Length: 166
Image (cartoon, rainbow, N blue to C red; front, side, top):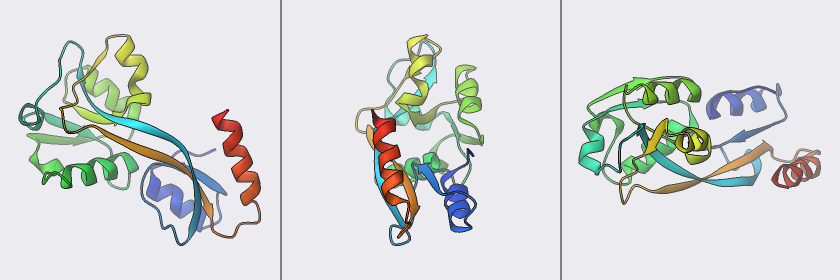
């Protein structure tokens, strides 16, 4: 098993180094077959004790986000662009290449971030992070299992996905 951002995982499949990947970001649908694994809520999070923020208050903060090539970052950038915004509209940005490190930075008050709710569920329940998603910035996105189009193992990959869902 390997972990990586969407761009890295797609490249590994292209080179034949891995057979399939679970990704959240964009991929070439002509080159890859896919099946949706789950649909997840994408939320803004801040340090504990904060309540929902308006978009202006959120933009006044430092944004802690994943590196370029990350599906999480791509989803955020597309979501912001659809509202005429970009990551450069935030007061400052910090790039961190790990979800656990992003959660730790946000919990320590370094800034705000956008992550999948499933990734921060434990921290929200423990009161370490707060969901501060502004009204109108709510989003859901798919995680998909992908593999090379035409793979002779496609039926096995689909069966594996059904097992994971169960």
